[in-house]
Amino acid sequence: MCQIRSAAPAAGAHASPSTSASTTSASPAAVAFGFPSDGPGLSVAAASARPAATRAHPAVLALGLGLASGLGAPPSQPATTRPAASTPTAHIRTPVTSPEPATAFPAPVHRRHTGQNGVMTWRDTPLARRLGLRVPIIQAPMAGGISTPRLAAAVAGAGGLGSIAGAMLGPDAIRAAVAEARAGGGGPLAVNLFAPLPRPTADRVAEWAALTGVAPPARFPSPPDFAEQLAAVVGTGVPVFSFTFGIPPLDGVEAFTIGTATTVEEAVALERAGVDAVVAQGFEAGGHRGTFLAPVERSLVGTLALVPQVVDAVSVPVIASGGIMDGRGVAAALRLGAQAVQLGTCFIRCTESGASDAHKRALAGAETAVTKVLTGRHARAVRTPLVDRLEASGLEPPDYPLPRSLSPEPPMLAGQGARFARELPAAELMAALEEETSAGFWKVAVPDHRGG
Image 1 (cartoon, rainbow, N blue to C red):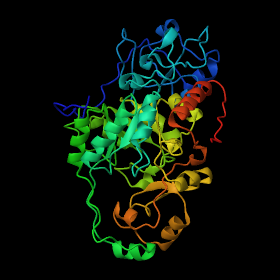
Image 2: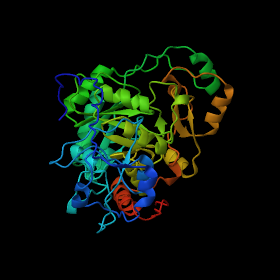
Image 3: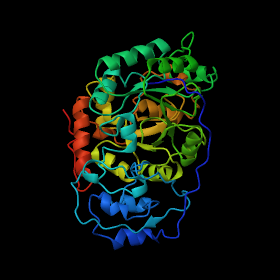
Image 4: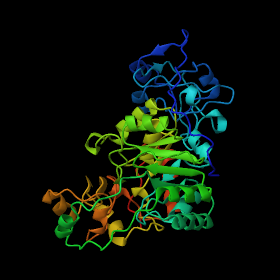
């Protein structure tokens, strides 16, 4: 339930990791090349022989010889604080004598959460358990009507986390959307809001309107009041509250909180603010950049590079986002240490999506670009002749979100993997992602992206 939090979490620093003279370390190269017998599963018995503070280097994890799947420890073993990101270590691993099925993978013992037969399956991450998910897949909140309550309900009903994009909705609309999603099926839901932003000014509006050929309205719509939106979210009792564009006030929120980071520094800031999990938004991601500390131009880090760095820098669960379109991407993100993935563009062509037919068709051969000209804030969208013309003008667009009201066409937000989007009902897409991810851990599986 989403309740009132009695006090904001302290912005605490990480506890110093305990050290022991008996902990034997090996270089990443030794781990990578010295123990080829490591199989697709690590039994509890074999893992118990390893030091409690062991953790494989991200480079080793990417090779499939270890997978940091997030925080968590067996009930009999206290969780161990991770070493600082600046001093990664790798340790000798006990060879596995009896490999488990291909849906299981080895995980460092201090972060391992065992599933059936004493091995961790990719579905059974600590974050998935905490949120009550059957699979660690989150449908990204996509504002502007793309993320419909029907889509959120379908994803939640298929075992993932469905998200309501509440940023552009007033309080009543938020409550109505949550009610509709709940009526459409079971499963946990999240509501997403934008952190409060400065109010836009009228600067550059006349020049931009002349460029686009769209006359400005007599009065631009007022953005929803954040405090009223947040009160509506709390009142619905949804278990998860997510946000982007910064760090909003969290004193009144007891729901599980998820913030968006595009850099390690932003992830650390979010953890210090008390969030429960961090979305690591890679450069490939569609939609608005969640950047809030440094200029966007200095925050364009790819998902493959960003996720393991964030995993090493924070102690809260990390959710990978950006360019993940099928089970191969899900498997790769989990191998890099993410406890879940957040997919947006992947769901745009779904039956339940609110995207226009033109938007869905554009994904097939889409070239995308990160640009400010569509909304006034950097976002990755399909590159169209309009985008080219507005960028070539050299004019600075008006403040966010005014350019959206001055455009002759709606922005078609999409990530770099847009051409992999499949035209399927969301439940069928979730089933395909699950099957592909299971296959993707230990063999190459090429999904069929042709859709319907």
